[in-house]
Image 1 (cartoon, helix red, strand yellow):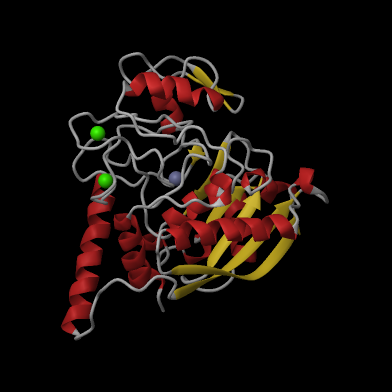
Image 2: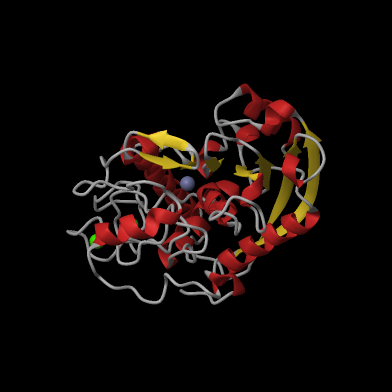
Length: 330
Ligand SMILES: [Ca+2]
Ligand SMILES: [Ca+2]
Ligand SMILES: [Zn+2]
């Protein structure tokens, strides 16, 4: 499911998927995003210390545990099972009522979007991104979800702009996050609320899951680093795919490395298992050698550079569609 939209022009790393030594490719290709010796020579989880976006981590596992790039909360195996059970119950109930449960056609569902720009004053340098960048972010969502053949189209319902120093640096789980969202959030479970701010700590964004909505409706939504939108300064994460990735969580997807090398993995059967996040664009990386397929480094739900992540799998599209029907369809 490769989509030749314009931002891929000039990409070098996708010339071919060769099955050469995974870790070697990993270390080399991640150099743009991670300075220093990126991953360990034998164990990708416990390599040497390295620096990422100005922060030094003792090893890669510490980096992952700290939730960098995306700090969407980790879902443990028990919760995965609970979500899965809830889906089966929902499906059984629908069927018992004589209602069909199936996948919907491409471009058949319009998701209303509110975009909340949090700034620290006027001008792009203070996070007050222009309408043109909001429109460009919407176009990236349209290309990603449309290109994947998903049911989802995104329609901008409104833009808010707020100057607030505390919300400008809000991180997950803080009072600032709660205040920001409870003040600004619009719509019900079907409405996508995107907040842009300057969260700091090397973070690029976080999201809530569909199953979180009923207990914390006001917290529902995604937060992205303002400079991750197309044309922003967060190179190599400035083509808008932090937005694509976080909306993937909002639609019910886990990271491709969820579950590491286990068979259940990310609960999507057509994404190959992956032991840990991939950075850069490590063509041919295979971190789960006993599981079929090379790592899904091109997938929007991995941690690779924006220019590298270009696809959702059919299984992910199905999961998003069903989760949306269960949790986000009034
Ligand atoms: Ca999988
Ligand atoms: Ca594999
Ligand atoms: Zn994520």
